[in-house]
Image (cartoon, rainbow, N blue to C red; front, side, top):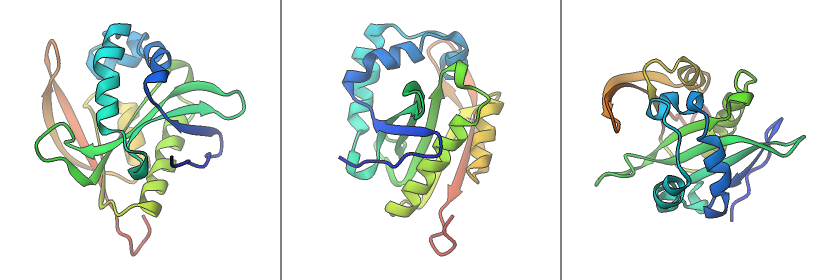
Length: 185
């Protein structure tokens, strides 16, 4: 299994089914879920029967794909995760050279730069250790905090679109970074 070095304040490990309780805890705050599904919290059944099988379907440690648990190194407290997987993974045409990066963090950790620190760390890991050509991210259009993280990663606005959630169609913003290996983005 690939080990990811720590960042300045954070430790990372690849998540699996044994992390169901942490995934459940994270999804219990409607504020955390606001820009995921409109604020609906996840049940443990959803975590075990939907979320974990989806996570396992794209998990590939050799390629850095999966959900990476983020803990504060000093306290060993779990605060969230970073997602890495090919864009359009759940379609007939996944883009293995275009990696989607995403994040979900507990509200108590917001505003402290943890999402940016973790995302930048994984951007650097991917660009140093893989042949990835693009790094992409999506967020609901009103999610200013996530869009700010995308900008800190050096991503640029790509396009707007929409996505059907369970109850409604929502506006989505796409950002992307083209990785120029000659300039070591």
